[in-house]
Image (cartoon, rainbow, N blue to C red; front, side, top):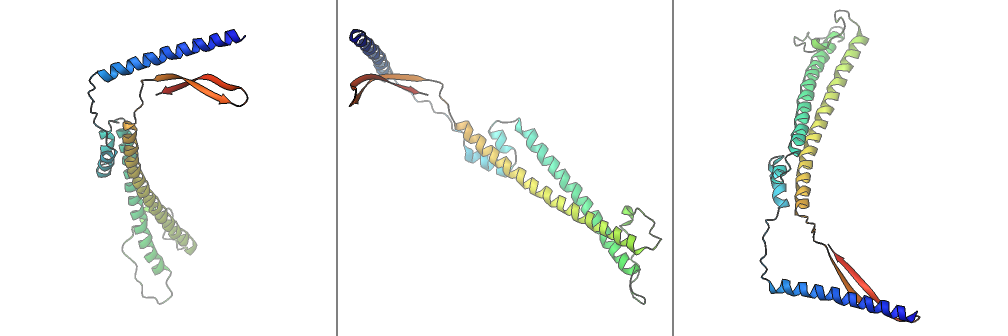
Length: 216
């Protein structure tokens, strides 16, 4: 039993010596050769950030991620359209609400009041009932509807502006992070180093083993 154990250890040591000798020879050849460093132009995250801040999409072009441009400009285009649409609707309902409020005050003023009928009637495009029939409840309902619509489109417009700012910020973050990943290098050259290692234990005494290290 001791014979096979000794033989096994002898074979292991020989294997380690051979591997170490090959590594030493390779290192010698590498040290004797003339090493010429190759300068690689580093991709600058700072530039990508500045470019995206100046013009959305310019950082993506710098990173050569052209496929992101349709997504980015599509998001910007949809957001700008939403801003324009909500702004138009808000202005229409705001003008209608202002004109109808004046008409409402004139129509239901106390007897002997001095208010005259307003000439501006920009609320007529939203009328869905016969205004000639005087009904305070219906007029109050219509006035409330105009106000609610006005407030709704104002909120939607403000939210669209916030989304536009969010798209702009995400454009900068995306370009910056993408540029950092461009500089992240993974070496495909894997190497393994095997070395003998002596361990000591109070129970078993000295033992011979192997240390294996993989570089990647």
